[in-house]
Structures are given as structure tokens and as C-alpha cells.
Length: 118
Ligand code: HEC
Image (cartoon, rainbow, N blue to C red; front, side, top):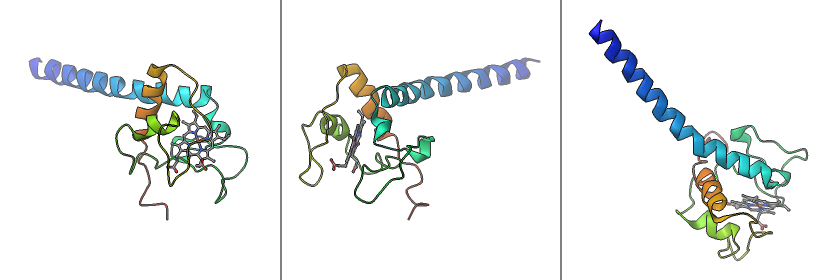
């Protein structure tokens, strides 16, 4: 019986840890939707699609944007303080610093399917 209780408690704590992990990600996703990022960007790996299909020159799908982003870069980029290949982002992020942090952390975590997609 003791073993069973210990096991159950183990599962409970692992579950709680996962739930805690998932919270910032879903918060980041919510900000992404609230700030209308999805109007231009799809994140296929997250089930975020936009009405118009992605084109070679249009806003990129962000499914793997975290794969080679240096820590802190995305937040700077979204504030137009950094550029990619000489280009700054189209719009400066309009939200609180906390929202920016959560959103950037969420995007940095998007590393999915980099290998599968070619
Ligand atoms: C009006 C359209 C538009 C909106 C809205 C928009 N973006 Fe973008 N975004 C672009 C385009 C276009 C690019 C490609 C770079 C360029 O040409 O500026 C880009 C690039 C990016 C990149 C870099 C991708 C890479 O190449 O690595 C990130 C990250 C990004 N956007 C995040 C966001 C986030 C987060 C939001 C919401 C706060 C957002 N974007 C809103 C058009 C948009």
C-alpha cells in the first residue's frame, strides 16, 4: 500500500510539473493570437494556420523560429531593436514588457519539426 501511495504521489508531482511547464507556453500562444500576429504568421506546428497560404516572400511560418534564435534576440527583434539580414520587423510590439517576455519565450521554444520539414 505504501508503495502504491508513493507511486501515485510521484505521478501527481510529475503531472504538476508538466502543468506548470505548459502554462507559459499557452500564455505565449494567447498573446500571439491577441496581438494579431496570426494575421500574418502561421505556426503550423502549433495548429495556428492563417487564411492565406504562406508564400516564399510573405511572413514566414514560425514553427521552427526558436531553433536557431539566440536567447533574447526575438524580444529585441519584436521591439525593432535588432534586425534579420538588415531588415527590422514590420511592426513594433505593442504590449507590456511582461507580455513581450512571455511571447518571446514561447517563440524561442518553437523548434519543432525542423528536420522533418525540408
Ligand atoms: C503585417 C504582417 C505581420 C504581423 C502582424 C506580424 N509580423 Fe512578424 N513578420 C512579418 C514579415 C513579413 C516577416 C519577415 C521579415 C520581414 O520582411 O520583415 C516577419 C518576421 C517575423 C519573425 C522572424 C522570423 C524569422 O525569419 O526568423 C518573427 C519572430 C516574427 N515575425 C514574429 C511576430 C510576432 C510575435 C508578431 C505579433 C506581435 C508578428 N510577427 C506580427 C510580418 C508580420
